[in-house]
Length: 177
Image: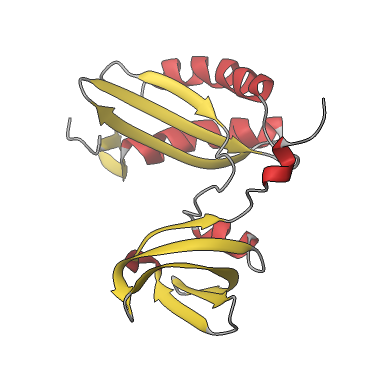
């Protein structure tokens, strides 16, 4: 199997779909996530050293805690074992996308228009690669961020290293117990 883990599904001699490992896993676990009230944020399948990792990120209003991760892991283990979309052994990790989550999918960008973001471009724009401001528009893979000085920068998603929510607030961690 290639590193992308492409799978070919054939029924009655017809090719139904050619899905990579991530797409196939998404197809299996997304209905379960929806049923349990979670958003399937992202799925990643990566080799680190000699080991393969299947990382599934879930979210929900109010955030995800360890119990959500445990419950979702229990809910998807049997369907993943039954469908067996990954031929090699791997470690399954389920977690929250975390604070300062990376915006990856179109729906992430659309959902967070109006929110503060941090963006790093692959190549510098007027000598600058790191931008912070408000995500004001996302259309046809074009990301527009209004900077703190009121100017805007628009780049194609493929020209970014990352775009993350800028939602970290140290005061959230300084509350008295």
